[in-house]
Picture 1 (cartoon, rainbow, N blue to C red):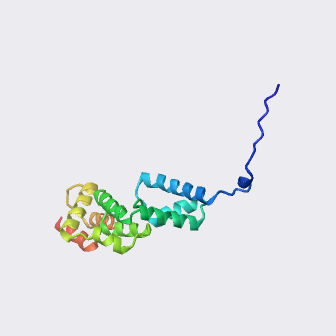
Picture 2: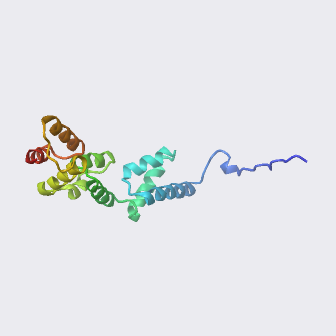
Picture 3: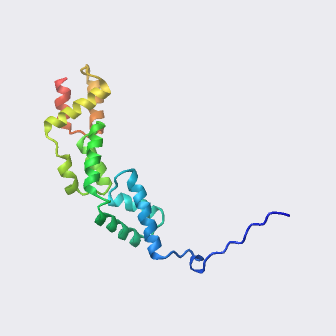
Length: 168
């Protein structure tokens, strides 16, 4: 006897793709928590990811508000972790600022974490330069220009790059 697939029965309220509002909100909340377990997100970032999954914008906004109220979505935690991570990887404050702005984080939230004095920033520039080019001084204008371009790309202020490269 040939195999017959059983008949699928779909509940009447789900036949048109209707999902009860509490179930949908719970689904959005669950998806948001899964995304937040991998790393911190800004509100804008998390909202974009949830909207890309096709969730209604009003429901996404209410879930994001709920996550902020619960303390699960925090731009302060995001900024603190992100700044330390990027500084540790050899990126400068200008690039980090631009990246955080692109994530939708306000300057008011960024500034306390990214205020570096010139001495600390110069030390970071020197570390990034040494990691890429070694500790040998640049011997010609072409090499100096290459190093300066690299450090500018990394997001360091030009006056500190000039100070470092002149010291070489």
